[in-house]
Image (tube, helix red, strand yellow):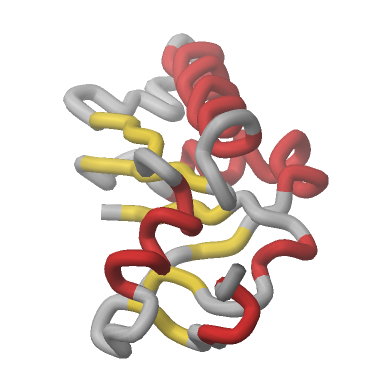
Length: 114
């Protein structure tokens, strides 16, 4: 499982344990490398703060790049790989798991309070 967090400056205040932050600004030039790195990974989850724009856009970009690379010497052949978007993004995640240090690192409750 790979969790790709595409938040930018809003990455502060916590993140999912084991996730990797690749900002939306970095995505375009890092996408081919990411597809190659995750070739053998069974599931890839993308998210942003709400998973309404950046997260779904990143997942779609990943799928397109994987398809583009598929024909080039077997690169990006994510055969059987599932790509997901975290429903509700990190906002919903932190509501449920923000205080659980086993699941969330660097959580700052005050940032997320209304």
